[in-house]
Image (cartoon, rainbow, N blue to C red):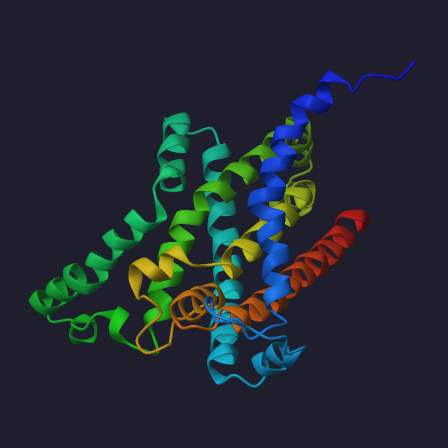
Length: 287
């Protein structure tokens, strides 16, 4: 007798179809067109690996890669330091710590574009006006108009918005540490720094790994913050890879070429994520 499909198969089937239609199929189409000269319209021909070779000789692409890696590395380090400090403070026995947890998590539920436009106003108008009235000549011009310093404004906004989620993960890690360990270390006369370095930090190592990998991946794919703050300018000074692929791929008639760029960037992100996991998990094993 032929066995009927399980009810769970029918429950999963719609999700599988939707995932394949709106995620897997577009990815496969992008990979296919990356081997052509398709501009997003009209006729096209196969060009082999020409688009992939061209990426490594494209000055705009290399500048975008340089900016993106600089932004991602600085932001990942800052967001993990800040969120860990906030988590340690919120995990302490202080008044209103539950209320403060809700307040610190608010940036995570706000729209990135809305937050970006608010900070755009702050950097472009609010801070320069205050600087003029107080005589701080170094801040009278908008930082967003400086090719050398605009990326700092993007880092500030991105770290402020991302710290909320990382703080929650660190709080979850801190909750798993038995209080007995701290009581024993206090009896042994350990200082607060020794308590953190010998007990707290090693025991939240798995959460540190998760935060580092997720933060780096998310910052490498930065898009909304730049659209709201600088649009990739001045010039192309703050143009990330994601923004370059979007602007030149959809509006610049380089659909096939930017598809090849997207495939390369996907491989880069996966490689970095796997490398991070391998390195950071070794640290967990040694504990």
